[in-house]
Every structure is written in C-alpha cells, then in structure tokens.
Amino acid sequence: MPRRIIIAITGATGAVYGLRLLQVLAADPALETHLVITPAGAATIRQELRMEPAELKALATISYGHREIGAPIASGSFATDGMVIAPCSMNTLAAVAHGLSANLVTRAADVTLKERRRLILLARETPLTLAHLRNMAAVTEMGGLVAPPAPAFYNAPASISEMVDHTVGRTLDQLGLAELGAGLVRRWAGFERS
Ligand SMILES: Cc1cc2nc3c(=O)[nH]c(=O)nc-3n(C[C@H](O)[C@H](O)[C@H](O)COP(=O)(O)O)c2cc1C
Image (cartoon, rainbow, N blue to C red; front, side):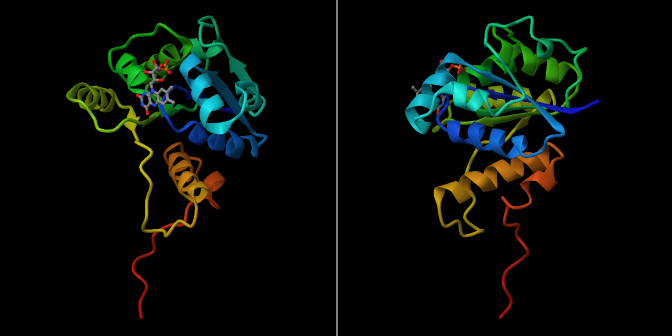
C-alpha cells in the first residue's frame, strides 16, 4: 500500500505553504499526493505566487476538482495516511468544525476525521473572532490538529523562504514524515554555551 497524503489549498493567504509542501513531497517517489484546490485557493495562487493552479497540480500524483465529490478521497474506504489543508481559510475551518461536506476539501477532511486519520489545518487569519476560536476548538476536540502557520524566530531565519520551510518541515513532523523535512527545519538544541 503506497503512503498517501491528501493536500488541500484553500483561499487563506499563504498559498506558498501548499506549494512548498507539494514540492517537498514530490521528492519522494514512494509517496502519493492527492491535491484539491478551492476556487478561492486558485485565486490566491495566482495573486500570491504568480502561478497557475495547473503548475501546482503538476506536482501532485493526482489532482481533483473541488466539486469532484465522487473522487476516491471522498470515501473512507480509500486508505490514506492523512490530510493537510495548507493554507486553511476560516470558511473551510468552519465547515470542517461543523461536519459540512459541500465540496471535496471539506468532504475529504470529514472522512479523515471520521476514520481517525491525521488531519492538519494550517489555519490562517488574524485577528481571530470567537467563532474562529470555537471552530478551532471543535476541530481539536475531534482529533484534528490546528497548526497556524506562525513563523518561528528562534532559528534566526534569513529569508521568507526559510520561514516557510520551517513551517512546512514542522508540518511534515506532524505527518510522521520528519525525514523529508530534514533540511527544512533548523531544530532548537538549546541556547549556545559560551
Ligand atoms: C488575497 C486574499 C487573501 C485572503 N486571505 C484570507 C485569510 O488569510 N484567511 C481567511 O480565512 N480568508 C482569507 N481570504 C478569504 C477567503 O478566500 C474566502 O473566505 C473564501 O470564501 C474561502 O473559500 P474556501 O474556504 O473555499 O477556499 C482571502 C481572500 C483573498 C482574495
């Protein structure tokens, strides 16, 4: 059974996280990646990356339309090793929190939760309303992992791409794919001793 990861890109700012995740996962030929992009996700890809969604789809093993509700990833009988929504909009977070499955992203997320598989949401918005916070709590109570893409500074990043890589590497840690993120994360080893 190949290792399969579902990746969704929704319309929060930070399409680069989805892109980088796809690039890193594509380096492992033993991994299958299943990609879904929402229409708002496609808009942010064009705005923020100056790329066409098709360029990201080319990095995935298989990609689906967001309305393709008959796709394999819409069924729990299709085994996967987890799902990452990177980035995750508050709209998609709300749908996941309430078990709504109107598109393939939210259906696949619902399936991932019901099958007790790893679901990671790089949920992005600021500031947060009580609704956002409650939805994050609901997803957490259901076993999902809410991992806002907040940059770390303890590793002294020299560029935005290093910040992005750190977040992507830590996401791979959570997927149990730490070996793929080896070059992306500068891990904390304590304060330097003088
Ligand atoms: C450039 C841009 C940036 C956006 N950034 C965010 C954001 O950071 N977080 C968020 O929740 N929504 C953001 N939105 C709004 C979402 O795209 C919008 O709520 C959309 O309906 C989400 O749909 P989806 O969940 O199907 O992708 C942004 C929209 C645009 C055009």
